[in-house]
Length: 259
Image 1: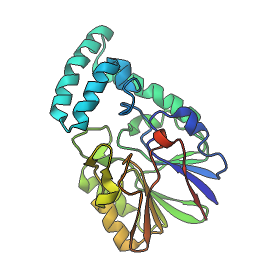
Image 2: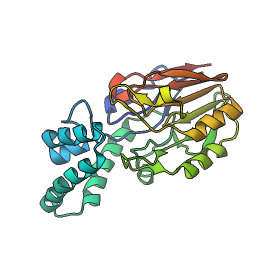
Image 3: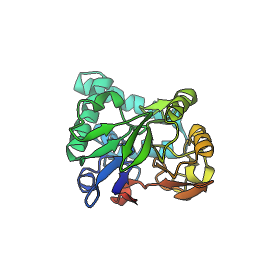
Image 4: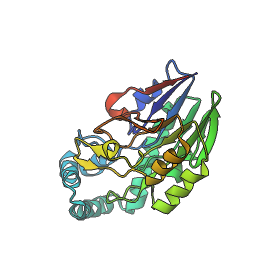
């Protein structure tokens, strides 16, 4: 059995279309939508709305950890867009997110097993998934004789992204998995070297619940994304190998898993 795994697709439609080539199935760990491209301020929903110069300013503020200033800065930009479009902010944003989802799910190979990232909007997915797409969150499925558990979303953070959960709610989803062979999540276990992004120069939020679950049940592997440029991509917790499958928008290459 050969499975390809991707995370943090962020609008990479054509690479996603080819991501399962040579594999029996695809696993996608979320973050399909591209709001901001930290490397190219002309790409993404914010660039479409505000233009590359103001998007670059917004990215700089967030990168510096000045989140309150970033929100205040975009508030004025949003006022101008809402006045121009003559509809409310939510309507504008939902339309752009849905347009990306239509492209992403049209390109999504099948069979594919998917969970949500922190920038995804779970309530929209049912309108776009196709036959052969299985969405799992706090659920387990069998792939090639192994039990795969899936936990979607992220934890509440200053980024204020669409699918963030409090620690208790997230932990309940992890606990619901029970023992699995492979635990698939969008965010890493709360291991500092797996959570630190060397380019953004900050710790992303990892899950203490995943870390505790791994210590207690020792699955073969934990697969995740979320941290685009991690200090380390792999680490062991007991006999469990923890693997960051990579920033797919950046690499255009899936992680390959065979057994």
